[in-house]
Length: 267
Ligand code: GTP
Ligand code: MG
Image (cartoon, rainbow, N blue to C red; front, side):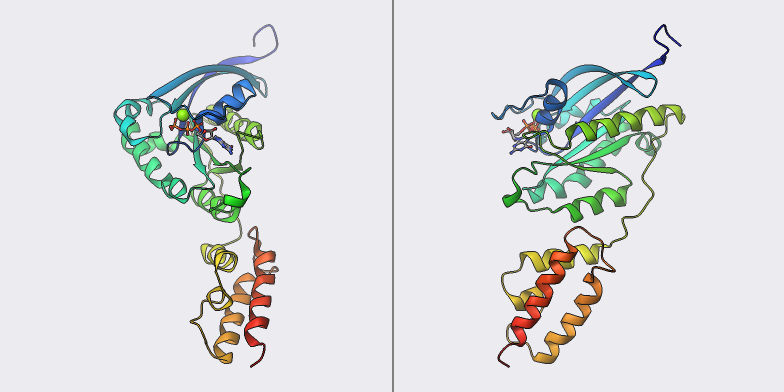
C-alpha cells in the first residue's frame, strides 16, 4: 500500500488495431484530450502516449501505442505487438471492408506476438466507430456484436466525433487489464452467448437491405402464393421477436409481415 491507500502500481501496454482511417487515433485523442480532430492525419508507423489513472484501488500507468492501419506500415508496427496486455480493435461502421479485416488484424497479431499463449493474455475491446454517421451505416449492431461475442471480446458502439461510448470502452479495457493482472496475467473472455445466431442476423439484414419484397423473402420475381407463404413461415420462425433478441429483429419482423401482405395482394 502507498500513502494514499492504493496498492502497487501496474504498468500496462495497450495498442490500437484496425484499417487506416477507421478512427483509431481520434478515439485515443477523444479519450486522452477530450477533443475531436476532423482533419485526417494518417498515423506514420506508430504514435506513442502515456496516461495514468486509478482503477479500483490500483494506480495504472498506461502506455498507448497507436498503430498505423495502412498496410505499408506493417514492417514498422509488427514489432510493437509483443508484451501487449490490451487492444482496441477498431472498425468503421460505414465501411464493410474495415469490419471484414478484423480477422486479418487478429491473424497479424497472432503471428507477430510470438505464441498462442501470448494471445490469450490480451484483453480486447471492439470499437464499432463512427456511429454518428448512422445513415451511411453498413454494419449494424447485431452483426458487430455477434463477431465480438464469438471471439469472447467486449463490444462498444463508439463515435470519436460525439464522444459516445469512448469512456465506456476505455473503462472496460482498463478494468479488464486490472482483472487480468490479478488473474496471473490471463485476460478474461466473455463466455455468455448473446442468444442469437448468424442466421438470425442475416435474415434481419436481408429484410432491411433488400430492394423489393421478393428479395426480402429470398424469392425469385413472380414466385407463387405457396412459395410466398412457405418463405414467410420459415422466416417468421427465425425472426419472431419471442425467439430472436438480436437488435433490429422487431423492425425486421414488421418488414417481413408487410412484405408478405404486399406480395399476396391482388392475387
Ligand atoms: P490511420 O492512422 O491511417 O491508421 O487511421 P486512424 O484509424 O488513426 O484514423 P483517424 O483517427 O486518423 O481518423 C480518420 C478520419 O476519420 C478522420 O478524418 C477523422 O476525422 C474521421 N473520424 C474518426 N472518428 C470518427 C467518428 O467517430 N465519426 C466521424 N464522423 N468521423 C470520424
Ligand atoms: Mg491513426
